[in-house]
Length: 147
Image (cartoon, rainbow, N blue to C red; front, side):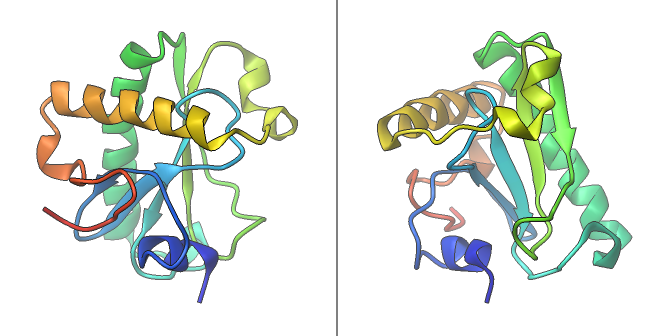
C-alpha cells in the first residue's frame, strides 16, 4: 500500500481540496510554491504510462480546474503541471502556481509547517467553491470523503 493510499484512506493526515470517484487532490508536504497540490488517482497505479487513458484524461481535467483557481487565488503568472513519480510509486500529478521558472525546479521544494499548508489549502478550497466546484471540495480539509 502506497503512502498516498494511506493518505486517501485517512491512515495518514492529508489536506484535501478535491475529491471525486476517480481521484483526489491534496497538499504536498514539500511545496515548490504556495498552493502546490498533488492530483492522485484513488486506485494505486504505479506510473503515468500504467494508467488507462480515461484516468489520465480525468486527472488532466481536474489538474486544469485546480490550476485555473490557483492562478487567481495565489496571483500566479502561469499554471504548472508535472508528472515525475520518482519518490512514490503511485501516479501523481503536481499542480502548482508558478511565479518564476525557479518554481518548477524540484530543488525549490521546502518543508512547510502545518499552519502554512492549512492556510494555503483553505484558500484554494474557498477558491474552488467560488469557481463553482463545490461538489468536489470535500466537506473537511482532512478527509477525502465524497459529499
